[in-house]
Image (cartoon, rainbow, N blue to C red; front, side, top):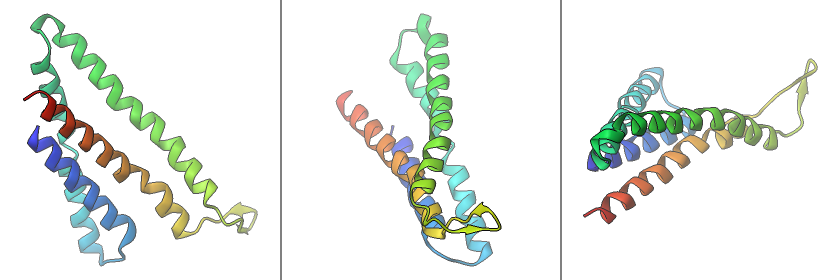
Length: 130
């Protein structure tokens, strides 16, 4: 559980840095690599969940875990789009909506925010099992 919490915190921090700080391309690539490496905690969630249930339920647990993980991707895309649209300042260029950097930053902050919420939930669950 500790590794999942650490990965969640590192993921959130690296995403906030990429979203809000202008930096050289090499540092952006480094942060994106860190985000990818820290995202590997999702695999650990399958392992942790399988240890929490009886063996005869491990396949169902893996299926439900996968469904939950994939459903968040399904939900985040429209949510990010809605936040970007909400933060739109109304500018139109050549008939197309023109979104500011701030609008994109507001929308993308959903990802590290939800990573922190998930990390807090994981930490809380792991504390309750001791």
